[in-house]
Picture 1: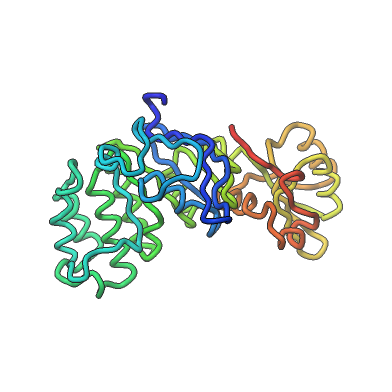
Picture 2: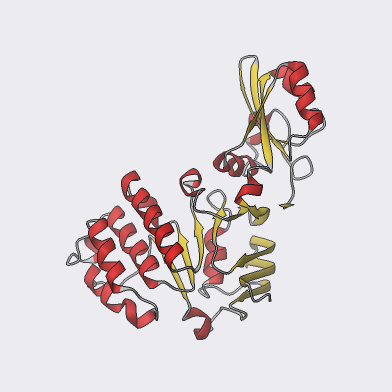
Length: 314
């Protein structure tokens, strides 16, 4: 394992009985970076995070965190914080109890930051955890994740319960604290456009397989859109892989895999079509349509990994 890689995954497989949920995954996460693990519900994101956090054994392949197998490895887990909205606590625990026990588990625990975030999120510290609202539970989880300052911090969508204002505060504090105290952060989210400016790298998972593994800047160049008359678009993208198609009357817009080269641009100009950029949210959504039974109705053609992108690594 490279010394710059905190996480190295090779040929990872995971099955529950006869059901395969992860298939031959390969990716790595460099030290002191923020990586997004993205994909649709059921894609396998939480399973991946649970394996990295040592909470589940793998079925095959190799997983290395800080140079060692994480499952039942106390040395690895001591340098990691894994938080999610559904975190379990003792029945009688209050928020204050969670914050007091933080230093027991996290060597770099910052009590001052935890107290500051309690005020920022207006979190009641003397209310029992089981009485908190969904948004308050989200706040508890992200406070633990940030105040832990663990060398590897994994956020499994604990911020979904926050309102837009609170999420914005979380993103601001996370970026500021990351700049002052660099560490490795892995986060999954459905609010992709909201976090795109935080991320340096994205790993996109669909049905347990990796479909994109690249830097965020490169991801924005991984596809493009063509909009215009339906027949004109067909002429423009005739030899390219279409990830997604949307139609309204005689107009259409398609998301196309790859870079918009000079040939595509020339054909677009000839047929009066417009080429545009793809947002990260739309790109992940387009990859999520691969092999989807409903995708033929959306794209107008069968969607398989043979006529779309099986795996993109840039």
